[in-house]
Length: 212
Image (tube, rainbow, N blue to C red; front, side, top):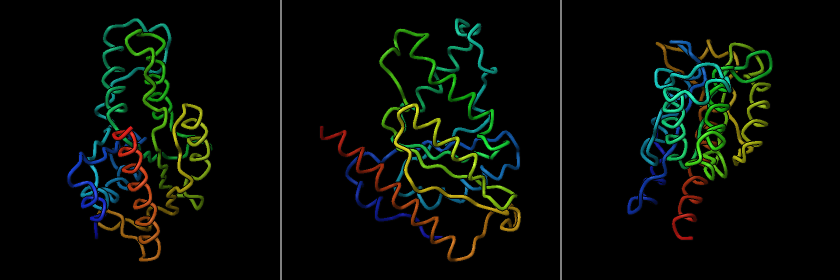
């Protein structure tokens, strides 16, 4: 599997763009985590990768009564900082009844709320202007596309730059060989093209911010 080497060469004298990869499923054998694992060698040379594993997230269901809890706020701040440090996000979410997973929505609700509950973060929206690439792997024939429509609405509402490209894997189980995805050449090329465009966009926006 080839990597996105041109991006690595382009930014070799500058800090690499940092991507936060978010598998939005709690399952140990999640198709979403498997899909992001498939992406990693394609983007790992051209980007610094941070993967937000479910074990990194220790949040209760969103509840405004818990906003003043020091323990909860500390967890939210930790996640907020990881989103803020990222130059772009790749979110892989399952489709649950036509929507994103409750797990993903809970993360977004807590992190986006921090600016309202802690004056130190009043002017900080880690989603604002962040490029976001959406992906989903589903055992159904739609490839999770309805859930991604919901995800597009959520991240757009928060001010993210959600790219038009998205990656939908339908009938996901048929592509699994020894716990990894192996796609046919045509679909693998499609994924590579989408990731290449996204990495280039993230890098260009990072460079523009640095020179502003």
